[in-house]
Length: 153
Image 1 (cartoon, one colour):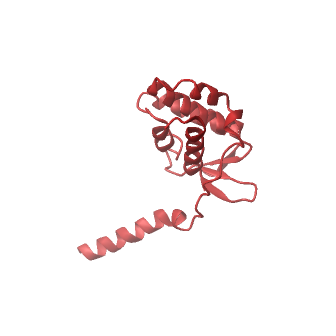
Image 2: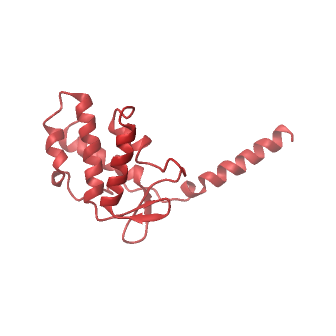
Image 3: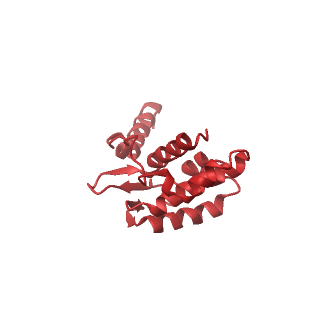
């Protein structure tokens, strides 16, 4: 097989992998898991513990997991629907397995809460109008909101 044909097949393969994200609707920046950061018990802890940066990152991760647990939205993992409490329990378990190498909330979002490790499928969030968005994007929205409200950047 010559070089040109290999590149063509590689392009087709990459297109097939990325098709779902190419045509996916952009996640709104105002899409959050819960209505208020103040309802999350980890908000107060985060806003009062800003000196120890490593501890603060752990609190941010716990904030995100708690936001998932309290959410009334539907979480999709490998095609199966889960309530917030189930999704949070799964992510808490995954986090406990990777805690030694996950140092920041952004590490958590990218390395733990974005996709299934065995299948590589993205975790999704399903809204009531049957739109789905990557959980990764919504967690970044939630983290930004937490950091803005508590000035934790």
